Length: 281
Ligand code: AMP
Image (cartoon, helix red, strand yellow):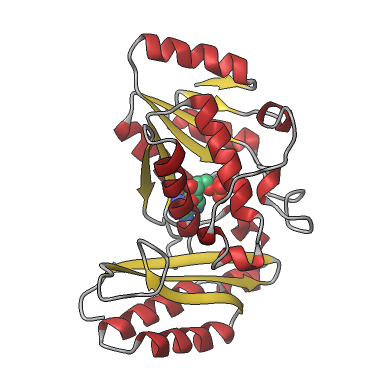
C-alpha cells in the first residue's frame, strides 16, 4: 500500500492508474477503522481495479462544542489494517491540503440537511457535502463507497452526485453490527462499560418497531411506542418512520420504509436505522 500525504503526490499516482486504464474506487473515512469501514473496502475491491482510502477528520462537519478535538484516532492500527486488506493507496491529507483557501462552505444541501440529524447538527451535512465534493474533485473516482449506517449522509451524497458528479457511481454497504446488535462506530469508544452493556437496547427497540409495523401497527403508533421504549434507556434525539428513498412521510408510493433514530448515551451520540421493503405496512 502506498501512503500519500499531499494532493500532488496522490494525483501523480492516480495519473498512472488512468494511463493504465484502471478504474478507481474511493472510500472516505475519518479513521478509527473497524469492520464497518473494512466492509466498504471489500465492496470497493469488488467494484474497481484500484482502491483509495482516505483518512481525514473533517473539521467542517463538527460544530463548535462537538468532539472534533477528541475524535478517536489510531493511524498506526489503521495503516496495518489497510495493508492487511491490500488497499492500494491511503490518502492522509492535512487540513490545509483539503482547505487551502478557507474552511467556509457554501454547499447547500437543502431540506435533506435540515431534518433528522440536521435539527440538532444544523451545519453538519453542509460540512460533509463540502469534504466529499473536495475528495471527489481530487480523486475523481469512478465509484465511491459509503455505509448505510449514516443513512441521511448517504442520501445527501447521492443527491450531490446526481447534481454535480454524475459520472461517479455511489455504492453503499449494509450496517455492520457487533454480535449483540450494536452498530459498529468509532464513537462507541466513548461508552463506559455500563453504557456499552445498555447500548444494544437501541437496535432492539428499532427491531421491535419493525415487527410491530410488519404485524399491521399504525405508523404513528409504532413511532410513539419506539420513542417510549428508547426513552427508558437513552436521551432520544429523534426516532422517525419514513419513506427510505426520500426521507419524507410514507405515502402509498413508498416501496421501502426506514426506521431511523439518533440517541444519546452518556458522552456518545449513537445513530442507527432499519430499512425494509413495504409489505403489509
Ligand atoms: P466515518 O469514519 O465514521 O466517517 O465513516 C466512514 C464510512 O464508513 C461512512 O460511509 C460510514 O457510513 C461507514 N460506516 C461507519 N460505520 C459503519 C458500520 N457499522 N457499517 C457500515 N458502514 C459504516
